[in-house]
Length: 151
Image (cartoon, rainbow, N blue to C red; front, side, top):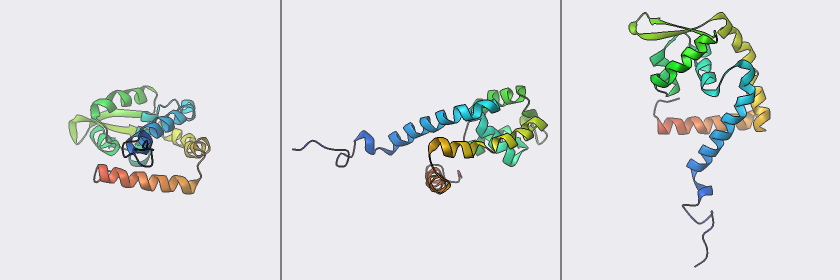
């Protein structure tokens, strides 16, 4: 019997979507690191700021739902962003036990600097806008199928 190849072996590492997503995800996040350093943001903090730039103010719970993360993960992250002066954490007026997150003036100003991040990332990933839009479309479709109502 001939040796299976990635084209004929259903368990070939190279043909697994989980492998491709894992390697690509680590690579893309690593590519963001030098782009985000001047903003003093890590990739997860950048995601928080993106959500706040679009939807602030947000409760910590609403932010967690939007980012598909646990509040226990976001709490220290938002404390660090508060220490950087980018956001304010106050008691949620609708739920005294929860936190309400709002942008500070430096946090709003940071958005203007961050507008260059997508342009820099296109260059770093060597992808044009059409390719990125198609990748985004496919990834959003995958997110919706894995987590209905996610996108």
